[in-house]
Amino acid sequence: MRRHAAAAVALGVTSIAATLGALADRVDARMMVMEEDLFVQPTFELQGAALGADRAPAADVPDHLAGSTIALHAGGAVVIDGDSGELIRVDGRGKVTGRLAIGAGAAQLVVDGDADIAYVTDRRGDRVVAVALGGKQLTQRAAWATPAEPWGLALSPDRATLLVTTIADRTLVALDPATGEARWQRALSREPRGVAIAPDGATALVAYLTTGTVERLALDGDHAGAHVSLTGGSAMNRGAGAAQPVTGFVAEGGAQRGFARGAFAARFIGNGLAVVGHHHATPVQVGEGGFRENRGSYGGGAEPPLEHRLAFLGAPEGATQPVVAARVIVHQPNAIGWEAATDTLVIAGYGSDDVLILDRASQASVALRGHVAIGAGCGPDGVAVAAGKAWVWCSLTRRVAQLALDGSQTVVLGPEATTSSRGKLAQRGLEIFRAGNDGRVSTRGAMACASCHPDGRADGLSWRIEGHTLQTPVLSGRIAGTHPYKWDGGDKDLTTSLTSTMRRLGGVGLDAGDVAALAAYLEALPAPRAPTRERAQIARGKKLFAGALGCDGCHGGARLTDGDRHELASDLKEVDTPSLIGLAASAPYYHDGSAATLEALLRDTGLVHGMADVQELTDGQIADLVAYLETL
Image (spheres, one colour):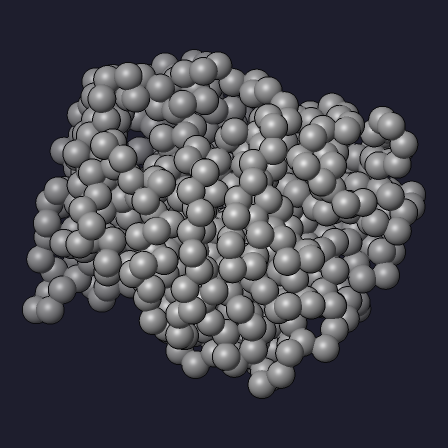
């Protein structure tokens, strides 16, 4: 284990020594990343004046106000491993002292330390499980049904309300943690993930993968909310749960636009601030003098089109809310931990196996303390901080890492806590899929497969690629048996497609063994869960789909595709028939993303025409058809 010395780095200034020290463990013969390219990546750089106060935070923010994959308990920790589906209790040395099967895909937990209870979201089982942590064995105390696909959790300051986000049904549910009774339910926008409650219990934040926003909502009254842009603007889009659809589609000659994406976690810290990890993508790059395309790149420009960021959110000021972004070196900052006593913020990079440590995180003098490598292949997706130590869950190696936050910054890895449910080849494929800083995959390692396909889904953007505007497709459930690949059907098989994708990303390419591993992982991804819809409406929509419209002529069979290419009124000579599996999770629609919603597609308001005769559909028929399509 390599130890990295911490360097005191002033606000907004990159520490080359800290950066190279932490990256040294990850750069090997496979990572064709030149040192001069590393120098231009800031370790931590604010894009504006810090929003924090001039004093240390006065109040604590308990860990249970936001969910994670790891939480501290009784001198050790409790972990939920989504791979095996086990809830695991470890002692102070990382040794397992208890385990309980919850369900593969289990997502997050929160711990009520006073009651010795962990609450866990069983993503595939559509339930929240309450587990008693005391005693020699972990025991299930209760299980409560939720809307489809629960993921994020947060427990209110008084421990009297449990908030749960659900992905497929796009809801926020407030449960009574004593009885499991649903007190209220509220609509959310698409692809919600983490939820966090403010220390005063008055508001909550919901993070999203694809809206470019975090939603702030009231926990009393009618639970009104507003979507706050993470791109640095302060305008709040007031609405009732749904953010304005944003596809990333930019017409030829349009202005360059950037979009925030991939927000898994939100967390309140001191002094009224909140922090959200995400990345910033520029799917269409426009230089001075107009569009100048580099045809061998995503975005069409010469520079990597993606940066990793934190958003610091201040207290709302009337109809607006201040937001300041910071560029960070950690790849995919998907997990956040904070210690009130020292005002220390720890951000884990899921794609880069490292953490960023910030001093005085909620103050105007916020500064970088250190950047530390956890260990190759870790895949950190959860972090908890207390008593000068960060506890990190390595989801790929299934170990708890403990990081001393003093000057030594020593990392100690515990023993393997459980075994993977994946085969060795698919496990290796996942490691490649999420890995950042890998020059084999993209230019300078700026992008990973998971950058555009977080959680195996899609970023909701349309990218300028090889002279065309092409929508990011969903991967989950859509790979096996759906060849040919790419929107024009130009790649005959998956090996060809993955190889050409690395070239498009500017990478030097994977060897045959790694391509096979990546393919094995992608083919094993489960399909997105369908939202709950009314049965009679689904039946009416299915009759239209297979009857009057004849959609099943091209979108039939088990994979919902004929595996053929068709001429449509579009900018592609021929368009591959995409699988419709997981259609509700794959907005925007058409190859160019020009239809933001299924309704827009059925009203023929996109830029692609000739797929079906939808001109005579009534409003009721469109609603029925949308309901059916969303269940595919």
